[in-house]
Image 1 (tube, rainbow, N blue to C red):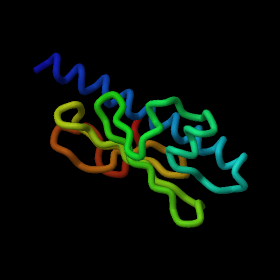
Image 2 (image 1 turned 180 degrees about the vertical axis):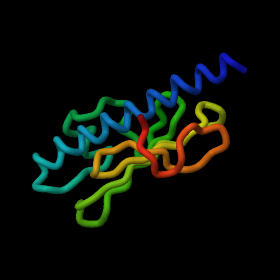
Image 3 (image 1 turned 90 degrees about the vertical axis):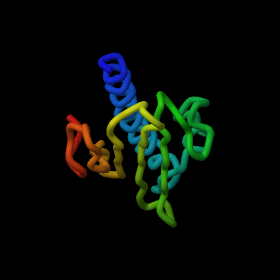
Image 4 (image 1 turned 90 degrees about the horizontal axis):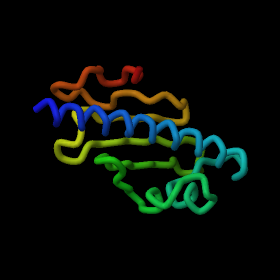
Length: 117
């Protein structure tokens, strides 16, 4: 059980770090794409993300990432959801650039909508 919790904690830390990387890539893309945000394909094609992010819904470090760009490209949301027992929490972010807990899951230390420390 403690090994599983350690693995979950590592995967969750990686998921939050990946969300922050995506937010940084979006800011860079925004400045080079005429004021619009891009999806994973756009970010990968400009070299802002590595090959792990070339899929529509990539899975990285036990989490599935969904990036939704609003029609017109004026906003976006990111959702990182654990696959199976790879994590206890789901995380989210948007153009505000703050990683938050996205849902209240039993055993998750944060409450839905609160920033990840």
